[in-house]
Image 1 (spheres, one colour):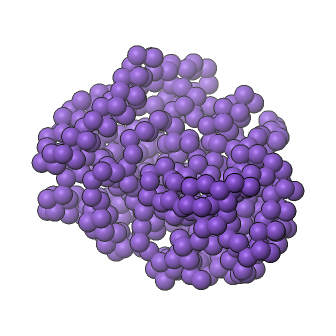
Image 2 (tube, helix red, strand yellow; image 1 turned 90 degrees about the vertical axis):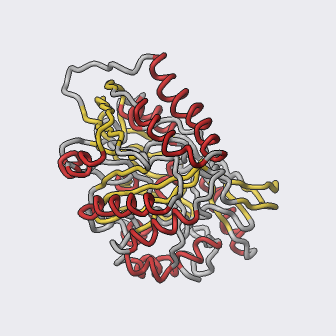
Image 3 (cartoon, one colour; image 1 turned 180 degrees about the horizontal axis):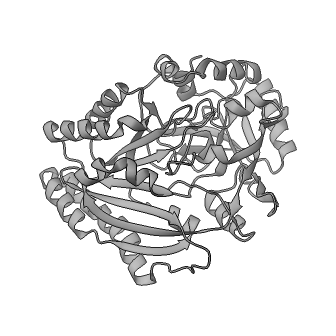
Length: 435
């Protein structure tokens, strides 16, 4: 056992003097959890630290699951793939691709571990598709007494409904069985369009594409639209060329974007001009590649992010109100606002639980003030029963969350049963779930 200082990717959360456990098997994990609980210690499983909130911040002891980071079985016939909970998404995507399999939907980054991603409700976009947690067929959960619960729709069904999005409050996930699909290609079509046109045709764009999202640049009238659709049988890959890919995805999206944000920090008054130049620099492109290569991109510029899920029927109104506030506020925002969609699901604490959903994500460069912007955003989405992404910045507590999640108290009842001593609690879970 060693001690360390833990820090998340965004630098919004730190913890010092933390004991580190690195089990190499499920038996070691279960024994470590049981021993720590008997000693009255607080435990947190920590993945890549890519959440902005303190959901994974350890208080006393952190468990790193690098020793449980392999694909243990893959059945091409059924599509069922079992993986260790510490498996990184990038490693997972490459690994199942070797079996000619893929996850049917992904988010836009792949730096998280699979267990961390599902536990916080990570999602991609697709009007007929759910987030990562909807692709879980079963999981194993190590609870505070060292038991290993196998959970699925048929076995420990209530724990399964709670544990797929649990913010780490129920125990430590040791393995997951995923429903995958045969590997597929996506045709990516990216093009700038007038924001008014995107908002007027939002339902048609969302329903008419397998995966649709757009990015709106504040202080401009332009949005970058992204449409990803499966190709017909026999169509071959036509990936972005190496030079064009480096220019678009590394030079412009990371290096130049970092420089423009630093300029925005020093000269905020230039932000509207910078955003207009950025939106004009966007050029349409189309390519075909393996699904995970289209879904995921590299993002290295550090920022702060808040994201809320709202009923899809209200998302255009939310964007219009947010735009009106930005225009009236005098605040300068160099980062685009991202809008995505998801189908309703039945997971108790999923942000899309029980309703067709649209996601609005706002960002601010990490060296620039964000509080007033994020607070205004929260006030707007509160009028639409907004649900915050569990891993992104928000200020809600248990009372507000209970009002927007019909199964909130059912989740707490499961927590009372599997972790009565709150071994897996930390300041964040105490705020969002209560003591």
